[in-house]
Image (cartoon, rainbow, N blue to C red; front, top):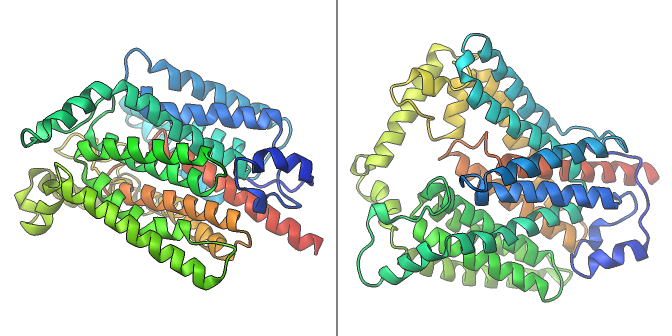
Length: 434
């Protein structure tokens, strides 16, 4: 959704943001200009996305993300009066998948409540894709998401405090896994990982002491939630962060040798910290049992494997267009979703739907990787690597959870696609100017 009628930004316009956010390398001729309406829209949309994991499962406060989402959609429509941006191919593919599944309503009208939820996610994703254009807006999104950690910690402090006090006195059982105000323990764990990553993105792209605040909020709050959730996805997410963080810290204006040394040092420290955390996790045996004793030794893993097999069986009966939206839940004996995004879409959408999903997942990942390798400035490279890290975490979690209807991760992904489209517009502008 890049727009090419861009404005040149003077040094005076870039100075206030650069004092806090290290995005100067991205604010070049041909870059986008952030007006008050654009930043206000980004702030509201970021608040709508960040409020989902905090309030959506609360009976008292569930109206907050819904109200903010409606306001964000309205502001997105308002920005369309100024410009009509181009849609990224990945977002077009996702929208096409949602529209394709709408055909199922003709034969299965009872699925409307579930489809309406997916439709709301798609609308918010489109709004985020329209709103988030510039590096400042993207960083504002992750700043607000990181700040939600303080609200989440306050809302769940009593339960976390009790778990922390009991961990030294007795062995925690499966029923003691932390879920708090989240839908379940797995949702809490994935939120914790993304919260940590958001804090890291702000730290590596910020300036001054404020970036340390974001880092501490993200790491301490996110790690506390991951620690007590006992989520396998959270444990795998922590391992992924250990691999990606050195790359996020590596780009530098210094010599290549010093940059490599810095990345290696960051890797050693990160691996040591993650190893220390994983070795002391109260539920680490949940991760190890399926590998050491086999899938049958863990009832949860055995059930999910059976779901995957069933998803392939249902897909084989309708290989091209699948069983329709919510097909796995309607046709299998499990009565719920299949706990894997890719298996669910293959079953419900067939090869056609899976191809659309593949475009949504693969194309932005390839573009982010190319952009990170070709970025000229340290700030642009670090931001792009951070966004690639989010895409990696999102993809990793999608193997073990159904996330195509996630009210937080899909809109964030759409915002990243908007950033990619804007960068393509800047490259086109620079090429034409030359």
